[in-house]
Length: 286
Image (cartoon, rainbow, N blue to C red; front, side):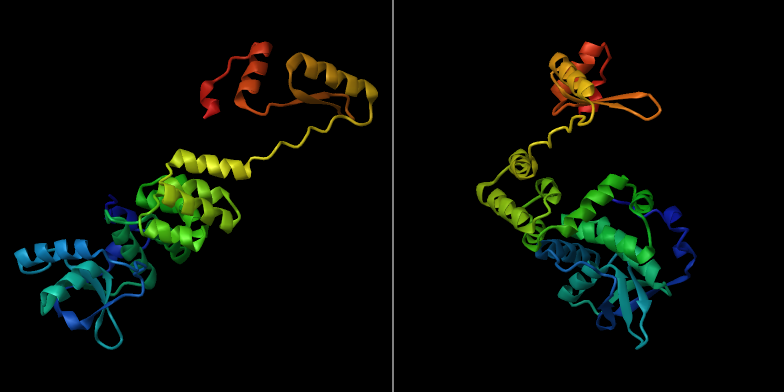
């Protein structure tokens, strides 16, 4: 779970915003425009309501800002507000601050990322919106939320998937691991077809990857041999016969030589290195 670290918010000046703790009438609280979450788990809201009923109030205050009409917009704590309404609470504890749009967007997104029931599309949307609203790169955001840059980038790629695939992620019929291979498919119909089969036949990640590979793997383009010098052509054929790999031999205008090989898979590549007496780091295969 993510933890909101005030030290990481200094660039936005969030900790510098003065706040006031108030008890505010429930009917004067409204969901904020920063809330990207569209669905709320009913069972989770019931559990939260039971907890609030035991304490008689919300122990953790909502974070809100004043609206022009005198009411308040919820920046963080909409689940507590919804549970409070279920219980018929007249007021809720709130921390009121004059936050800027960027500050409120950051606080709201970070609160969403702290949830344990966050689905992959909600997580991806939070990352995307933070980068857009705050003009952050994936690397910058990764530092802020304590994740790797690749983690951010891989999740944001989910937003380009076919809408039905995204719906399957939201409804938990597909996991992030199931959907990630589909991101390599440009055709959304292909994405949708594989996703539907994965759900229907309960495919594992490996099966989905195999289906994706069947669509994306093509025969490699043949290596273009030298087409000007017959001596070079013959040399290329001789080298290919010895190494078992297609090769290209070039001579530059300066008189230097270039030799290139095409190894279609790791086994061919390691075989060539063995014949050359080169020690191979197996980590390169991953």
